[in-house]
Length: 342
Image (cartoon, rainbow, N blue to C red):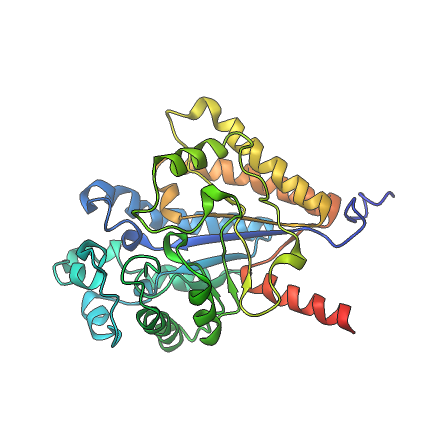
């Protein structure tokens, strides 16, 4: 049997890693940009999408990180208000403030804002990591960019996960991928061991809402189908030498789009090629999306996901590729360094 058949990377080094993370946020993730009545059907479908994704993860042995908005651990708006941090974000744009929004939200909308039952279901599925997406879907780069408010918010997320579910949060995904080195440092001080950083390409750089523009968005859309950005596969030794480890993102899995159905194969083919390249060269490939992205065309999205996971399975058999959660990647990086040092 040759090296490939034995599951040894072609490069002769360590096996590649496939990491999956999901930004689990329900309406908190789009509350300030899309009216609830325009998004309600998609959010309701999350209740079906999550169990079906978990079934696929179980089937293919995928260790996924579910970065969960802290509010989703709760039961009601009354509990949310009772758990408000002492320091609030104080955004200059009032529409960003979830606490102002919560004052007018009705109890009938609970299904769109809270999901302790789904959190429990994720916990019960082998290989799944519950991580933080901050307490309130906190925007790190929106003015006034208060580190004190960020610390209070993340501490609130850590506390509610521990108190309600007995969880110790080890990984963090920054909402809207907004963060700075100072935010990563604060997260490390609060016990976070892994963050999801952005790809190094200019089009993926962290920006506030106003700093983003049509050029960036257009470039990212084009990059989903054509090889525009580079550097989306990550050397494990370059993920960082201190806590928290930067488990950099590689690609956002865009949902099935009926208008773009004729180029769907280009999108999936791009991900497959990157996944195979990571497996062959012993690098990290980090795919992410939101559960609500699957809320329209659920069957088509799950079919696409299965196709990608079948590619991972092939790379696992041929090259020994591993599926690791973000926290597992961080521990792997540090344990590898200890072995080298020894």
